[in-house]
Structures are given as structure tokens and as C-alpha cells.
Image 1 (cartoon, rainbow, N blue to C red):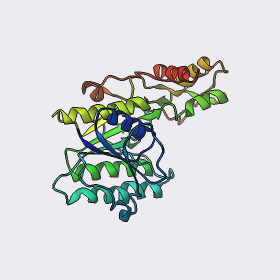
Image 2: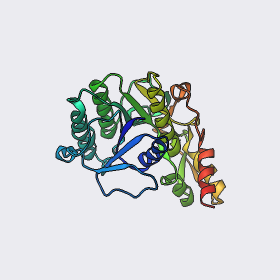
Image 3: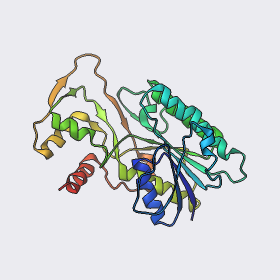
Image 4: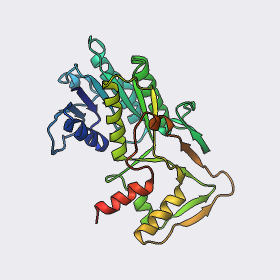
Amino acid sequence: MAKILIAGYGDVGMCLAKRLTKNGHHVTGLRRNAVPTSDFEMKMITADITAPKTLQKLDNDFDQVFFMVAPDSRDETHYQAVYDEGLGHLLNHFSNQAHKPHWIFISSTRVYGATEGQWVDESTPASPKDAIGACLLSGEKKVLSHAPDNTIVRFSGIYGPARTRLLRLAKEGMTVQSRPPYYTNRIHRDDCAGFLEYLLQARLSGQKLANCYVASDDAPVPQFDVISWLAEQMGVPAPQPQVIEKGGKQNKRCRNDRMKSSGYALQYPSYQEGYRALFESTV
């Protein structure tokens, strides 16, 4: 069994830790703030990766690091602190050890700059349009330059039990862009954890991982269609369609061919299966 560090122990991290401990792995979670209680046994470390002295109590003999640290705030300063300074400190923590862990770095499809409905995948050049995307891409490059066999996973929009933004928008009966279609991409929280677990098991069994995976479900669809469907399921009024004659952004559509060809089977292939599971869990 492997010794694993989950740096950034949030919603996805907790879901992943539960899966890994169930399979006998030795898991340590690292987070800045108070440690949440859990119904399974694992080690927790409270530390701030932007303050290297707090990392002194962290072991340095891990087999695997999952880096999924979320900044305190969604602004450039906080992202730089995590993906430049903090990431550098954590990489340095292991750099002088003979036994260096493999890294799986959690990034985002935000690193793509497409805005006209183009299809994107791992072969599409990353060209972020904002500072947050640029920080994520910088972090990717830092991890790969540290060891070329490390792995990047670019998640699309994560939804699940603790992430119900679109449900809230559907209930509000807001006006939603319908033309041109504004494409959205998503992946359920459980598939995020499931795919990360799958990659770990594949690597431990001797398979060589790719350097990058786009992780998204099978159904990139217009946001208007998603919110309309959600409104119908909840029995609330449909959103008002908005037609933008000029300058209407269409976002992008994410291909998940590499993720699926790896052998991973999505638990929730589309938003319909995922949101139905959320509805059923609240009944």
C-alpha cells in the first residue's frame, strides 16, 4: 500500500481520502485551517504551504502527492501565493530526498482561452485569458519541470452535494444566454475523486500515466439547456432566453477522450445522471 499526501484537503480531497483509506492506503491530509472530523481513520496536518516553517512537521517519504490546494480568495494575489510561493515550498520539501513522490497536480480547463465554442483537449495549446488561469498554468509547468513524469489533471466545472450553484440559478428564474449557445462543461465531485483514485491505482500497477488529462463528463452542453432542464425537474419557471446579437461568448467544449481511453468509466456521464442523484439524496 502507498503512503499518500493530499495537499488541499477540501471537498474533493475528503472524498478521495475516504476511497483511498478504504483500500488500505496510508493517507495524510494537509490543510491550512482546523481539521474537519471524519468517519474514517487518517492522519491530518495543519500547515500553510505559503509559510515553509509550518511544513517542518510534514513527513518527506510519501509515494504520491495530490496537489489540490484552493486559495483563500479568487484573486490574482492569492493564486500567486499558492501556485508560485506555496507550490515551490512544497516541492522543495521533497527535493533533497532520495525517494521523491510522484505528483498529480489538480488544474482546471480555465487554462484554455477558447471563447467561441471550440473543442479543446490535451493537444490544444493552453492560452489563459485571465490571471487565475495564468497562475494555474504556471503551477502546471512548475510541477512538470520538477519531474517530467508527473501528471496534470485539468478538471472542468465541479458539481456535487456541496456545489449547487446551477440549482440556485435555476430557482431564481434568471435570464440566461440562449443564442449564441454558451457551452458549459462539468464533472461530478465523485468522478473527480474516482478518476484520481483510478490514476493512482494504474500507476501503482506499473502503467505509465500521461502528463496531462482533461477530466470532464460526456456532455458539454449550452448552459441554457442545463438550467432549463433543472427548472423542469424542480417544477419552477423556465429561464428567460437571452439573445446576444454581437460579442456573445460561447466558451468551449471539452473532450474527455484521453480520460476514457485510460479505462476509467464515469459514474455520472452527464449532468442529468449527476443532478438526478442529488435530487434523490435530498428526498
